[in-house]
Length: 205
Image 1 (cartoon, rainbow, N blue to C red):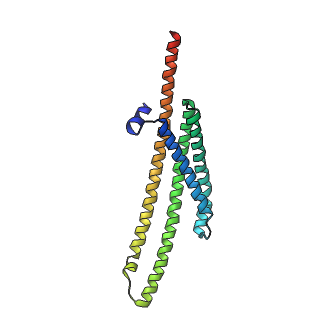
Image 2: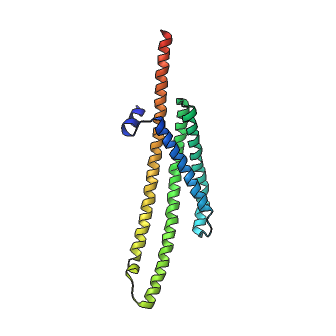
Image 3: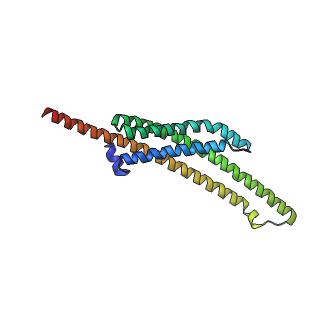
């Protein structure tokens, strides 16, 4: 029944699909940890960036380190021990990875919003200073300065929208991946059950 639902509403839980989602998890984990290391090694970080770095770095390493280890374990099972018992074990691990990825994505979303928000705020403060300087000497306001508030708000809104959209897509794909792995485990179990029944019938005859 579960396999039928996955087939009907998503796609066939095949070995190739499980391999693809596992490789995607591996790539995602490596990419995010690489970016976290690059960010933490930057010089001239602001106080807010240093605080964010101290708070979020450890959970990110734990969450996406688990994702990398889980993906490597999954690749080992798929290629070397493609049995339902091991696949169900990987399926349970996939659920843990999915839940941790949801937490990790939420952390990254908050960090990205705060980080990019501070960048936009800094840029707008610099522009505001220039506009005040311009008005002080010319007693006039350029179109760029007149629209400064709207442009800054719109830029911040666009950044938040893109970050949240990425987070939602990441969470949905992670849940979808766990369903594919679970569906494949059930599919292999059904095949093993059919094979066992056939062998029993042959033995009895």
